[in-house]
Length: 103
Image 1 (cartoon, rainbow, N blue to C red):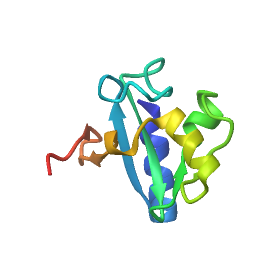
Image 2 (cartoon, one colour):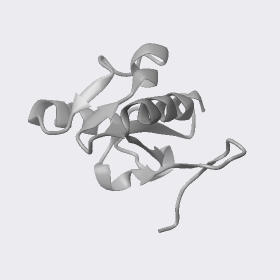
Image 3 (cartoon, helix red, strand yellow):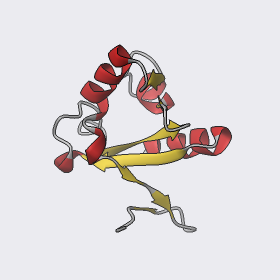
């Protein structure tokens, strides 16, 4: 899905990491099911969700950055991305395929 590519670019540019979820495992998330079977996005500084794809491409979010240290933004992020305990780190293999760690 294109969201993974976008998240990788953001994570690489700003020193973040890519996390994501399968829609079937994260029913409370409003982003993901319409375009793919899940969704990936960047976390920067363990504080900011950065999701250019959801904002600019899919139009699913009203902004590209959510500050998880701010209550209102954290609540909005949970509506869009579901509960944090449903997110998993995403690995990108050398052949470009996406994979989830089993750790």
